[in-house]
Length: 262
Length: 378
Image (cartoon, rainbow over the protein chains, first blue to last red):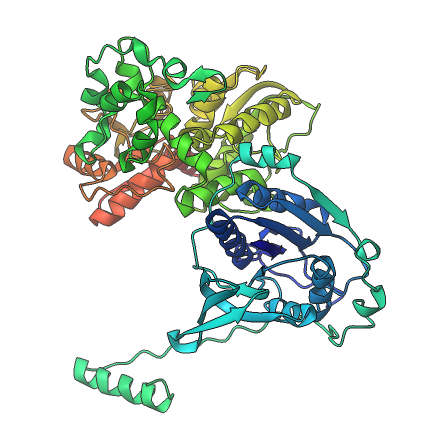
């Protein structure tokens, strides 16, 4: 079983206040901490669990700055075998299709059975890169995967749909699976493991090394134009329902029905 | 199994144990958990059993209060056997997600609270605070601590220290945002590799400052540096020592009074492990109007609040009464208005217990600096 797992280095915006810079198109990241995208962490774990069960190898692919190498080393410490970090300023990073093309450039000339990605990235939330990657690679895909069963030449993927439904699909290999959080419990990468992982191969490549034509993945190629960023206004309203319990229940029920909530 | 050429038995001197039972006899968590540390010391010399022992849930019940080490007549540290077993689990990567995230946060951001390093000194905003620069000479270099730097409940410790030190007019400076975790909890969780890295990095970092002494705000940092960082060249103090000194020499005095009964809770890391019992008591007694009460279980017999040993990230499976609840009930029985502590973890656990018990109206849990800070503003 030969797998790839694509991971992204993202800011944790849960604690720091998000402020838009004066250019209106970027955010002030000076107070952010960065780490592996949550869903990608589960994708790494799933790829390693399958490797531990079925044998084979896992390659990590990531587009990101030098600082992201600590995240890549952690993935290697958890059991991935080698990694490619792609760094090139020409990539239109805000467009998932452009990102998928670059990732495909790192994968397409090699043999593989499965490609894992997280189902979405916490920073831009597009939920499209994995699916676009499957298209670029010309292989099957299943998104929002909560359970993976590897069969002979196929994979059975349990997809989480709206309303809590689970759809079970079988895909011919090779295939791309975008992994939903909660599929497993990602392990910890101890420092000694990270140090040992320093011996594993980590190649840093740019578009030229990958043989990807910059004019196909740059701002001009992208159909997505980032016009501006803004913080949505927070609106809230609270209504206190007065009266006896029965009266309150009746009023509440009426509000819920009117609002289409029941 | 061997750890860096030493066997487990050699590393923890297991054959030195005479199975006298002083460790289990004093262990505070035995009243609420299955943990029997003597059993682990007895069994761990059989290396074939280590994996099985490491998988037992009770190894995570130890709070690293060090009562067993204080009581051991052979000078052993039975708790470290449990830490050794924990480290086997950590090395396998299969730790609780909360522990995993705390450890990873120490590596990436220098604190176990999953907060950005860039926000470490945000608590200083709006304060007249001096910040240290490498090479600059300073008499008192203040080490803030991750919990005090980030937790909104205990940031008051650092904020009030600034006021107290400004008031005393002494030469001091707080470490800047590149201050990193002391590793107290990393050590007790058993992440040996990460702890070794912190020892190396923090020793080099702190030695680069031209300081007369390092003053820690948390007893966890104080004891960890004292015990595990032999190459720090600058003398280490806990803030209660510094403030006690300032009060004794008349550089700090209190405006107004506090007509309250205060019971002092000895934090394990300050008392049992740091040997500091009198300074916090003298500080509290220096406040006009204060009547200082004493718990029956005080000083080296102090009851652990269960905040140490990585327990901030590991929930015990026990459903028995928490030790912090016992402590608060004891304080209420004594008639205390205030339970004072000199440790951020103790304040957080004791205050949670007090609120959980519904005693908020009648009692208060306070860090000593909180009380003193109020008295210089009066």
